Length: 528
Ligand SMILES: Nc1nc2c(ncn2[C@@H]2O[C@H](COP(=O)(O)OP(=O)(O)OP(=O)(O)O)[C@@H](O)[C@H]2O)c(=O)[nH]1
Ligand SMILES: [Mg+2]
Image (cartoon, rainbow, N blue to C red; front, side):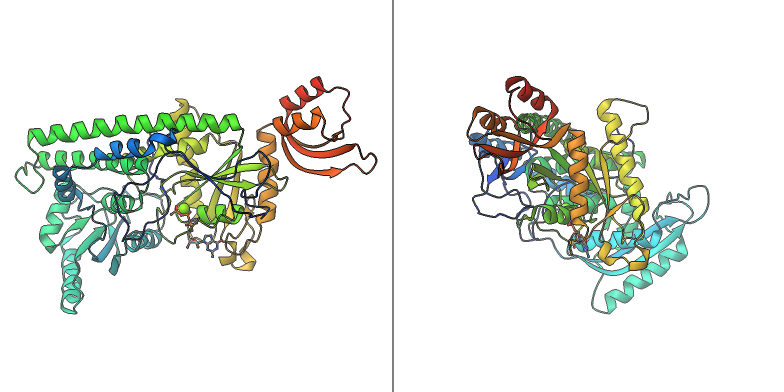
């Protein structure tokens, strides 16, 4: 199991009006674009024998049966008894339209003593916690960071702070905007802590785990994403039950009969089996893609750093909609684009990472990142306009390394190969502070730096995949020409100024294919 505290995840935010658990096509979608778009960055030009468009992974390759497969998988999630349990354990709901909450956001942090950790500054953690609440379209009425010596108390806060908070809440209530929910922004609170706090204040209390799960429930579009979220809920319910039983508080509002516990175990097992099935399909899809030899560039990074925006800038794909929300992207999706040499590639959008997300929640999503780690090139996007971008960068790097270790079952230190570090949102950085050493700085909004980035991606990709960019002179319409169209990426061609029976083909070709070409057509004219 992976021991780290970060997450990354899934796709576009459905407005609150969208159906949270509605059926959505999750089969290996490959949308063939028929538009006559000739933008050089976009993979959607019309030409020869290549395919352009957008893949969605995470899914099933048999297009004919996709609907059946999806509805079968989603049937597992349909269970009223479970809905009641999860709602009492973590206050999350399946409702399409969430009740709007007026929230007091409390960011506890250990300011002194042995439990103090060096991490993101509390004020930035607080800002991130507020963003989580706003992502749900809830109102942040009050937000406070609260220094503590440790987080172990039953009511978390000391008596003085509790009185202060009660007064703040009472003031809000009497001013006509009553507080309806307390968000204590800590990974997971113990059940007894939530229960005691909620009794003390008379309103529900949520922790980071449950708020993130509620966001994921809203943003999950594909069957795989929905199953992953559903799986992520179960360890939380078990841990709350354990807490409660340890406290001897049986009979409180989270009591499960033996048959309900059995139901929970069965649900967990069935979701795991279903996910395994979907992942086997994804593996097939990945192999198919390899057969077609699409080079893959994975875009990874902290949530909200601009991954989706960068892909939009690189591919000009209009359907991509970046959102100023956390965990907007939950599904790994692939988007076709062209490098400057006109080689077609797939850019893979991935789930964003976030610190202080409990391991159990992460583990359900890391599998979606395996695709990213298999990519030929990884672009690590960093929001250099963010105060904590260095901590965020370290966080992402450590998570990816841990993931690699677990995939390779290797305890030694691993290095991430083929990574390009990109500093995004440079337009928001003061001109005098724009020196970022090893980063290629870009703005996905103004498109500045995009050409440099593409050249860097192309260089690294050609190296990583052992491809060469060369020009070959061949007889017009001959076997050599046909062979090259079949076995390499012909990116453009020119008439040969010296011989009108010949043509100059500009190709991107693997070293192996070039050797085969030489072997077959040893007498053919060549030009490097
Ligand atoms: N000013 C500025 N804003 C940007 C830039 N890139 C992205 N943004 C904004 O940052 C926000 C997040 O962008 P996304 O592309 O959705 O970020 P993401 O990394 O895909 O986020 P998740 O999918 O939630 O992890 C959006 O409001 C974007 O418009 C940039 O270069 N400059
Ligand atoms: Mg995104």
